[in-house]
Amino acid sequence: MRTVPTIIIIVVLLLGGSWTTYRYLQTTTLALGTQLESVEQSISAQKWKTAQKDLNTAQQRWNQNKTWWTVLLDHQEIDNIDISMTRLEKYLKTQDISLSLGEVSTLKLQIDHISDTEKLNLQNIL
Image (cartoon, rainbow, N blue to C red; front, side, top):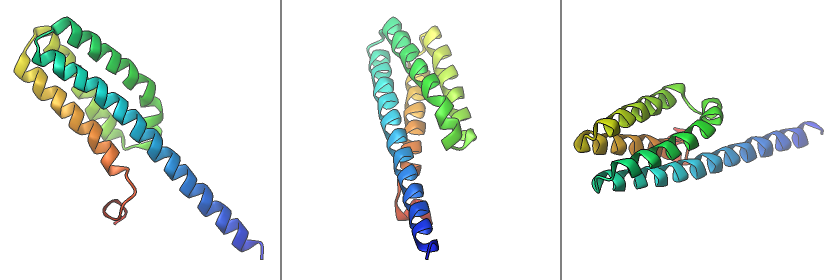
């Protein structure tokens, strides 16, 4: 008789942990995506100092979240985001508008991809 309550408690803990993880990832990806939107708008307006400042803020936010993300996500995705951040930083320093816009779009797509892949739906389960 103790088996059923134990199984129910384990299932509830797993579902609760999964939901908490998903909410955390969704919240952090949304905040990072908003910051990258700001970088993209600054690049489009060719406000390079503002874009660099916004990117620095995004990098700080990324570094704060990266520790937990490495526990929760595939390391390849985290490495890809690190590489894109570094590329974007270099493109901003050279003030190359087309490469900067391309890289910030890639970075936003990578961040959005994380939120989509961690969503609890049938496609991700199968």
